[in-house]
Amino acid sequence: DAPTISTYPYGISKLQGEKAALQLASPEFSVIVLRQGTVSGYSPRMRLDLIVNAMFRSALTGGTITVNNPAIWRPVLGMADAVQAYLRAVDAAPPTSGVFNVASGNWTVGDVAATVQRELTDRLGAPVTIDTRHIPDVRNYRVSTARAERGLGFAPRADIATIVGDLWEHRGRFADLDSPQYRNIDVFKTVRGMGEG
Image 1 (cartoon, rainbow, N blue to C red):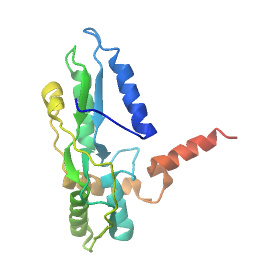
Image 2 (image 1 turned 45 degrees about the horizontal axis):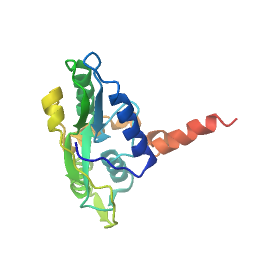
Image 3 (image 1 turned 135 degrees about the vertical axis):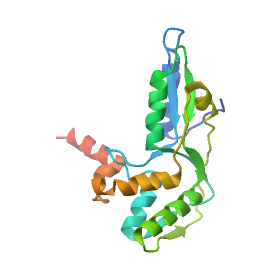
């Protein structure tokens, strides 16, 4: 219920979409909005441009994780918890409607980096370093999942170590860590270019 403010077009469009969809809610039609933490972990349409996944990639390719600001907070959503949230939303009893935050937990960027470092140092048998820059960042937030837990029965289970383990287990399925297909901005540029011919 906290005020939502975004100055970025992506965030603005998401909020506008929420408002439009919620206007359709009625006793006969449920509208459930899931505000996800940053989804991380393995998926068939892999992303290596999201906090845990990006740190995993960086550690594997260069042995270093760059942290711009270790003190800022991020809600993170493990892939299995994301799937669980969608299933809970689909199975929710009518007339359940509203906005629900779904996250596996809230961690500082520094804590995420330290966990990725520890988990991969153990698995690689080689040191992984953290390069901390202390660059100001206004994107600093935590969320409560209490409403999703009460209203949808959402019960997050993942933590950062679990997510890293999932990435490690499936790493053979996205072996080319430099492939542009794993970064959304590059995928969008390719799709945009296809229409310019």
